[in-house]
Image 1 (cartoon, rainbow, N blue to C red):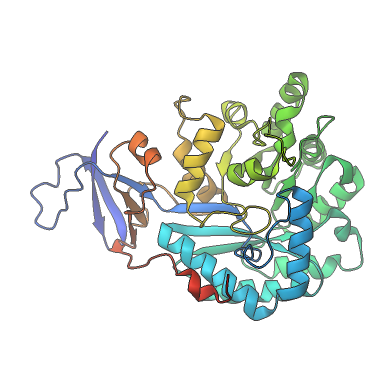
Image 2 (cartoon, rainbow, N blue to C red):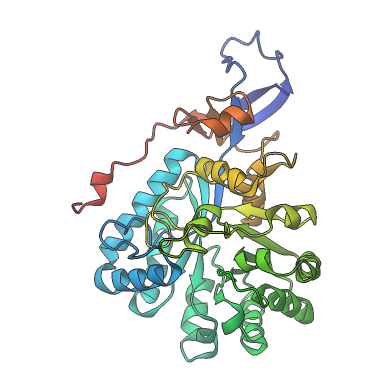
Length: 396
């Protein structure tokens, strides 16, 4: 379907049948090019991004990623280094048409104390360009220790701050979850959790999270990221867990490029499993399913550029979403936007934060990089390009 879009005072003033504005003097004929709302990237790691050149993953595995990231964090993460890389990341996303980002922040040690004030500074600096939210990335037992008040206070004092944790079946207990949920309730915070980022077949933390939310009648939003191992459970377990997620109101964000990169990797062996959760089954059950960038050019994922076109393009191919006749474009626009409390829709009265793609159909959109896109913010063409790698500093 084709429509005319009228813009006025930085907003979409009307959406009309095609040809309605043909006689308007300043109308621009886009010749059928696709117009999208700006992207919302709801799961990233800005503080890790772009460290690959100095500290690559030695073997491409999940453990290799953990070890390399810890090494880099302890050796290089000064305020200036982290701020430079986060700024570079934001400039990439902004130029590609992303207007909202939620970033998980390593909340460990010295860096964990410094990164939250940095995020608050960047929120102010980027206000009106990229809306930023932060999530505390740490282990669940930290919320049972003496430093939990400092972690929660940093989150609560940050606009859009969200409590997070890394939850796997082997490290998740009902007691730890109840403490985490209790803190979120006490401070009125949402939860955004790394869940089951593995291929374990004998159960999931996801099921326990859903049951805890139901038991405690938790009222805040819960977003669970990755959920890789759900796809390797028995069909009986899958059909048991998915309805629990719907009943608990849990949203799912899949990180398809990163998960395919890390999961089922063994030297000299072709992977047998894509590492991606049950996108189609979750969507069919009415669970809000979103896609996001996750890691960019760091030990957890060696590639990327904070371009959500690449994420949906890749996710569609990986998850075979192209023949489902479902609105998967919403997984990188209106669904994450709504979850973050924003409007990322083409509708009357919405901000004229738009992307015009040089493609006339989804097949064309999927088949090229769309590097020639035009981004509008408040109805004006954005004169921005992805920054040069040279601005990161350092040598290769």
